[in-house]
Structure formats: C-alpha cells, structure tokens
Length: 268
Image (cartoon, rainbow, N blue to C red; front, side, top):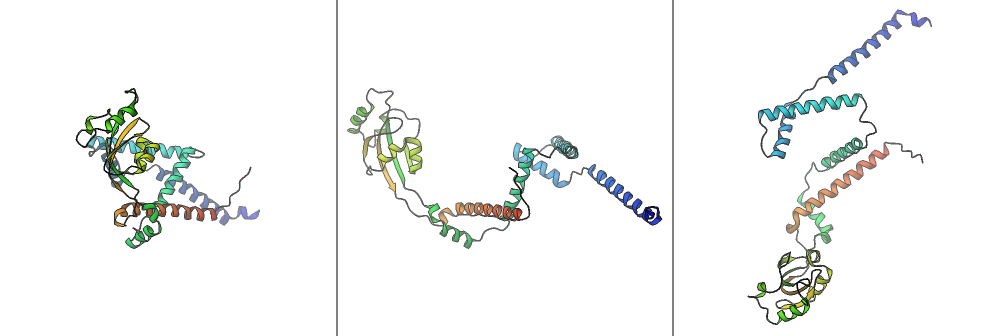
C-alpha cells in the first residue's frame, strides 16, 4: 500500500477528483442557462400564426416566450427527478418522433418523373377509374303514403323531363348525381338499389326500384364504363402513394438495423 502515500499518486487522484467536480459544475451551470434564440422566437411566432391566423402582438409574443421558458424549466427539473422514465406517453411520443425523423429522411430526395411512372406501371390496378353514372331520381316515401310502390308506378306513366321535379316526396340527399361511382351510390341508397341500377338502360325513366328509404323512379342519362387511367390523370395520387411506400420501407429498414444492434430477451 506504499503507493497510496506516493505524492505522485496523491497528485493524480486529487487532479482527477478536481476535474470531475469541475465538469459536474460546468454541466450544472450549462443546465441552468436557457437561451431563447431567434429561431425559437420565429418558431413560436409561426405556431401562433398557424393557429390564430395573424402575427402575435408584442405582448402576445412576450407571453409565448415566457411560456416557452417556463416549459423548458419544468422539463429540465422533471428530467433531474427522472420523471421521464417508465412513462408510457413519453415512451410512445419518443418512438413516434424517431419514426417521423426516419420518414422525413426518406423523403429528402424528391422522386424523379421516371421513378413515378415506373411505380404507376407496376401498380396500375390501384388507379382504375370505376364505372360512373349520371342519374336523376324521384322518391316515394313509404312513411308518407299508403302504397309508395303503386304511387311510383302510376307516376311512371306521366313522368317526363319537365315535370319530374314536381313529383314524389322530398328527399334528404341529392336528386341528381353526376359521375357517381358504385361506392357512392351504395353509400347513399344501399346495395339493392345499386344492383337494380346496373340493369337499367340509359335515357328513359324506369322503376320503381327499392332503396333503404323507399321507392324510386330513376333516369340514367349517361353511364361511363370502368377504364384504366393515364399517368397524367393520377400523377399527384401516384406521388403520394410512392412517398407513403418509401416511408414504410424506410421504417422497416431502420427497424431491421436497430434489431441487429440489440440483444433481445423475453422473460415469460
């Protein structure tokens, strides 16, 4: 144990302790400095503008800065107490923020027109234009009539292009549809109505056909068959889908790399 009494050893130990104490003091001192930069102020102002629709006044901006400083102090003191540990909300928020960082990094380089067209060619089935229909209808309510189907059949004998709006009962939805898809028609009238509509011819009043509401006379004015789209027609949707796939792929790649850097044990 003679080396303990060696002046050189004592000097080294004292030096290490002083360095550690000084480093701790510097860290504590740095942790007590809160700097609100110009970028911070600009960010606070922009957030106010996006929420309120106008630039903050001088008094409002002072209040935003004060709130920012107060929040920063609370965050630092909470970290000293270890309050961020084992908090489900904080854990999920951190994981979400990392996911956003990974996704944003994947989109730093804008896709080329060639890449988008190639993507479109590989996924053409996503961009088919469904069959669409132009139609008008007259509604006959079973709640307001003793026999809605019979009244509709009677009206069919006299209905024409000039008087059809005067017939039937008021309807809570539209009476005329332009380029409506089967999905839209099912949503508004139900599957039974859509099935009946598919068998109607174009140009004349026909019916009555049944919906979830009651009886209808229907005139199909035009039917557009399903078709493939061109790239120019769906370019924006292609770009959005392409970027969504890039984000998904970036997340999967990042997760794979992270798993390789961790040893995972599950105790059941």
